[in-house]
Amino acid sequence: MERKQFAKDLEKRTRKFAVQIIRLSTTLPGTPEGLVIRNQITKCGTSVGAN
Image (cartoon, rainbow, N blue to C red; front, side, top):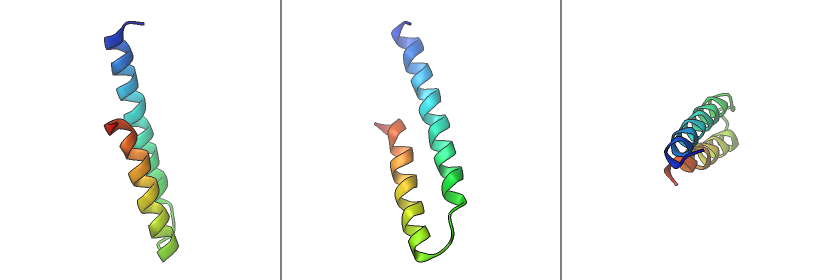
């Protein structure tokens, strides 16, 4: 696989992962604990694409 194709595939996978994490975080309860977990999982799950 050439580099450009690998980079495009990686970008697609990380975007898909981030969207899945955001969808998961919306299912968490609105309790104080749930909000903390929601915040943390969203930060971690979406930072993969940025890095």
